[in-house]
Image (cartoon, rainbow over all chains, first blue to last red; front, top):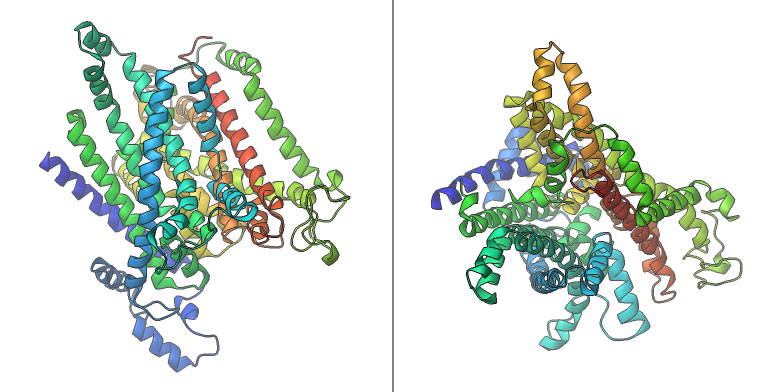
Length: 312
Length: 303
């Protein structure tokens, strides 16, 4: 098991290096000199030369890459070009805000997804199953940013039920700040709910039809031990999908955070793009992608712990 | 590895059709199944209608999509002469929605087509040649799998700059890795089948084997997968425009319209929902059509 985890970790390292190359490379493929984005157009040639040295742009590209990577590995992403505050500090705050939403959305989304998936498997072919299938089919093609706008329209514009934007003041009492989270969390949980629900339903139906479940019942096992076997067999792919979905909640939050003006990592990314704030941009993408890789790694290890057949 | 389930679960799509050889009369059966499937027929008709209306936009509406009137800003739904209301610069929304279909469909379908061509080429090479070249291709794809799809698209668009072309490039890059994986799996599986061995033993050249045997097997699987991706592609491309990273104003595009109408949600709440509704309906039609196609092409079902 330990060996498997270590081997899996070793496999993640080239992927992470590749990710860093992509993030670094994208900036240099982009049209325009990175220095032009940092300096006002009327800057003198001397000032530009100075800036080049200060940011290391005078060095060859591969040295720039290794310098950047070395600093990135210890969380040194330099200063934001826009407001000269350390990139890392901005990123930590923003990530914290994103994680809050993602955890809540994952909790409710996965929870409802599992319950709905189990229910529709139990009522296979009957109306709850059909209703749920219709909802998930619609849910998979739902542009969730539009859903967010519709929710804002319903709950904040037409009725004054919930706040439409931001995350509230720190001075507000806890339950009032919680209100700011309701709409983003509801929007974010819809897709994980549908996707997990579909998979749970499919897996459970698949396993129930297998011979060993009949054998267990025939052996005289009561309902709960049989159910335990079903869950144990259904779990690995569901867990894998949960890991991925959680990764999407963290890394793909840009649209929802933009609609709700939630000061998370997606919002930071969006601002960095429009301010051409390259250090912030690179750091945010790199950190989010790294999260995603590590999450997949963790999922693989957990899967292997549950299902020894995967450990090869 | 977990990322098999990244998008519309390419792994599950690749498996069934892989080791199967079309029996005689297979396509006839597919056609008969499709003609009996009312849902698929209905959504296909809807899509034809949406495509038709956006192509025939100048004949469907008498207004100019770019010419607004300051006097007629943000009129509600049901205004005489503007039955879906007007936007923040007084342009007719029905007109903008009709014209917007052109760019929205283009920005959604083209990336899938590009990734289909590039992805199946790379996948066939990786699966057929294998060895070091195959490993290199597949490991490179793994790197792109390490990004959540929206994040990668936003990163590429954000750095290359906004515009229709960059949004198409960004989404094509997002969709190439799953295409490569499917093409690689199917190719590697087909290559080992007896009839390919027989063809090789009979002296058929590599190019001919690929053209006749591999391609015919890869294309069916990958086309079904591609139709399911169009749905996601339409949502993502509209999402990029929604963020201001895709199509640029004043052009008419559903994601862009959604963004600009959203700013006026406190003045005209209902109008803001319209472009999104169209994105939703179009994407769902593509999704259901792809489901129907997959069902009709599934050899295991004997209906």
